Amino acid sequence: MNKIAIILLVLLGCTRSNITDTSINIIPHPLDITKGENHFVLNSRTKIISGHETEKEADYLASILRNAFGKEPGIETKVKKGIHLKLNTEIADITGDEGYILTTSRKNISIESATTAGIFYGIQSLRQLLPPDFEYNPDIKKSATINEIKITDRPEFPWRAFMLDESRYFKGMETVKKLLDQMALLKMNIFHWHLTDDQGWRIEIKKYPKLTEVGAYRKNSQIGGWGSKERSNKPHGGFYTQNQIKEIVNYATKLHIKIIPEIEMPGHSIVAIAAYPWLGTTGNKTEVPVVFGKMSDCLNVANPKVIDFIENVLSEVIELFPAKIIHIGGDEVKFDAWKNSKMVQDYMKKESLSSPADLQIFFTNRISNFIASKDYRMMGWNDILGGNVHEWQKAADVKVEQSLAKSTIIHFWKGNIDLASQAVSNGFDIINSHHIYTYLDYDYKSISLKKAYSFSPIPEGLDEKYHSNVLGLGCQMWGEWIPEISDMEKQVFPRIAAYAEVGWTTPSQKNFEDFKLSLEDMKKRWDLERIAYYGRLEE
Image 1 (cartoon, rainbow, N blue to C red):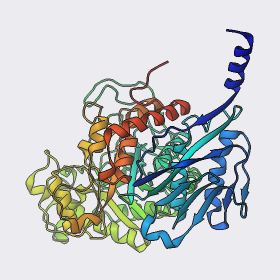
Image 2: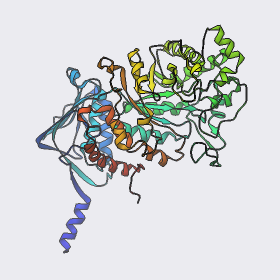
Image 3: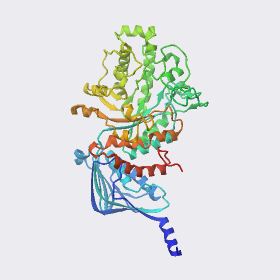
Image 4: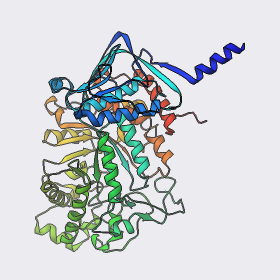
């Protein structure tokens, strides 16, 4: 090779022009795509054109381009050539609340929507039209050629959620922000934050400081799987201050993500009982459990002091989370503690409650009324409807005469799918998170990428008139066996991308083979972000 050729190769390595492929590798796949013949060249001189109403979205796009070019792009109001962000309420029938129209031509890129959320999601699609490495290495001079295209897009479901359980293993603010960034890129709009459970209380409650002084720390941790005698032989702990919660909520809000906190009750509450033993039903003192699974004690819902405690906790939680929904858990309550308590049995007789399941519904309705008094809405796992969901429950214990408040959002996770259809036909809104399709703690043999992609939130055979009551889906990263961040990432990625497409893309536009091709670009991004996805070739 001669010297001139070597010099040219060096120069090409330092000054690179990236050209996007003619295929459209966007996840989730858009509703409609029309291609043209021209192209737009994006470079460091490209301006953003935005009015005051899209100022936040313009700032967000500017931060993306700053990462790419190493300099702040100009944001203008009257320049003709550049990236235009436009609010247009006249296209609401086309875009809905979160959709957008993205158009590229020789001189301009236009992102148009009836809402700022739609503008934001249009930006995410624009990002994915660029080469996967475009937002990285700002020291390298670069440009990108974007082929002429028109994308008209809107989501299939309004609820597209990812849940992180931090009660088992605390992950910290930077990890949560990184997850929120990836959710935003995939157009997911709900972060379901599981903050309390038997093995850890992760949110500061000022009125009850022992919840974190005691409940945020445990002496040891079970490892090796369910029923294992192995232990980590090291303590674990951590929690979020209220100021940290506010910072994360504000961060999510900029990404058009609502955060729904989950505060478990009346079961999965041993951690609270460890901090304040008078909350329990059995009267036994306990430590924060080091093993995972269902515990025998639960909150004594017959004790007025316990109800006061719950309402005081929820009052502080409501002040921190503006999304108007509080998840109260409500799953896997072991009824033996209530059945063996004279106080609880006397309370049940007084209120004419015939079964422990009726008591749980009675209690849940009381909490629902309190949450509603704050102009919030209650959400809970489908156990709160009563009925025989678990194989270990006795038929007499789950006999139900009480009716759950219809304002409740039912989070379906377990039982025959007919239970979900029944809830919808009875007037409830539901989120479908059927565990055999959506639990990210399950290994890839149990839930492969293809199986995750095949999931439909609409129960099979559900009458079309009830489809609007199925708000969407959630995918759940339960935390028992993910002590390290890399453990979590390998369970979440790449399956989260499949769930994102399930929630956004209309079924007629879904294609698993096309999705896998688009996923290759997404994996390149994850490599650059140092996200340890499943199947990644180790260096």
